[in-house]
Length: 132
View 1: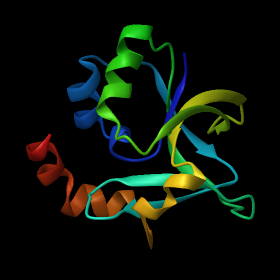
View 2: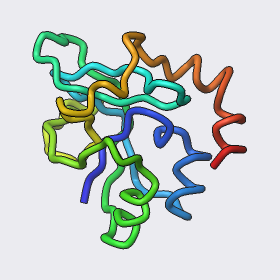
View 3: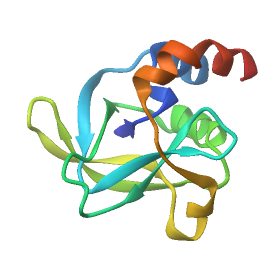
View 4: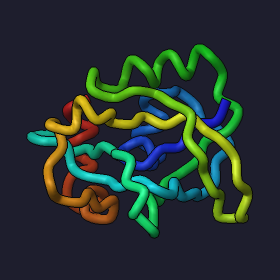
């Protein structure tokens, strides 16, 4: 199973803490989506936005077994839905992967500010890890 990650799970330290082991992965983009911060949290959520020409940058993990996917489902919050989405890898391979998406009925949990992974890594990663 493939999983497209775009937030905290893109970071090796978070991924390994949740899954317990590395998986093959590549950089990827999810077209037609935007990324925003989650209110009162350090992590983001994504929503469909077909006008989003750049899409969301992230990491695609491959060969995820059902047990690991179950741990990831438990890690994610109540307002996400895991669904299949079209992803484009850095090598221009188009494929489908699972992703945790904020559905329209839960967009109220998002801020209006875009979430920046570089800012998260520099300013919030250690605090995030200490809280999990």
